[in-house]
Image 1 (cartoon, rainbow, N blue to C red):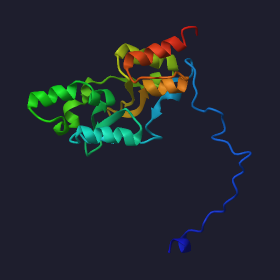
Image 2: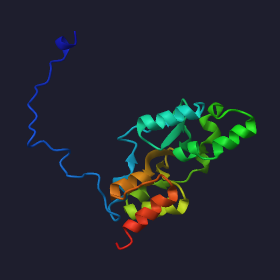
Image 3: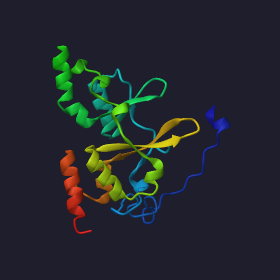
Image 4: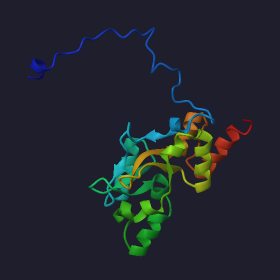
Length: 199
């Protein structure tokens, strides 16, 4: 029986007058000149949200809802990343075009049919992130016209890259305290710009 092997831990009464979250009032709040690493989703601490390329779009949508994300890494069985799929990909015109071209129903379209292949993605080096501020990441996302960008760490000796993190425009906006009323790309950056116009 489990209690023969593992003894229960001691428990204390939770004090409602003096128990706080974390240790800071708002540990996730950042400023435009805060270190960029503070707004990166660190994939060494948080497992990435993934999906297989042969999953259908409904499964991808459900996976995003369950994980509370707007981007999924598309991974093969061996762990190799083959691309990314975003909420914009799911709700945009691409699934409709693919379905029409194949004479298929939208539900029959697979993730691999609408994802952005990895070879078409650009990423930021972790070494550059470590020297950057939040404003640099916002400017990078705006220039590349995407809601997300990947962060990679290079291992020159092994000749490979490891995905270390993801930047999300909507997450950065939340941490900056910018109120987002729409997931549209242009509005996201317009609101960030407006919030910091006088900074």
